[in-house]
Image (cartoon, rainbow, N blue to C red; front, side, top):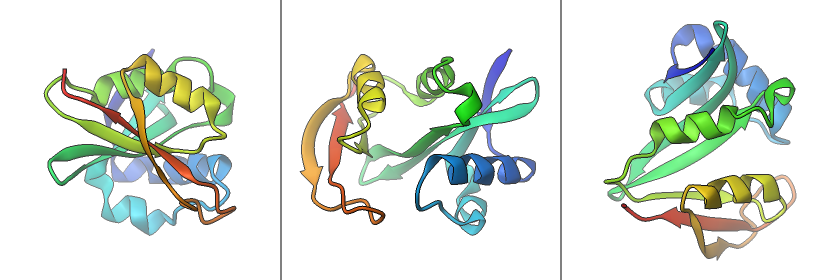
Length: 137
């Protein structure tokens, strides 16, 4: 059974592993440790299989990033985490790579729309980022 809960210190090694398997320029463990209260983890049978980070920025909720272990992608883990953190009273926004069509499709399913572009946002290859926003319902 898949559960979603706040990240704790014991989850850090698995989160860092998923980060390194998911991104060309992974965040250091210290970032997750220092911002531990901003992250949620998805667990299956007690094992961390994904994480999502959310922070308040200027009165809106910013989805920092979302990642799922490669062995658990396309199984509903990201969907479940997004459903857990979304609420109808807050505005949410995020950045996503134009090349990441599966993520864009998932976010659109939850009411996110492209509202802008951040030029050369990603340090690894200079790719732009789409800014996507979901208004309060």
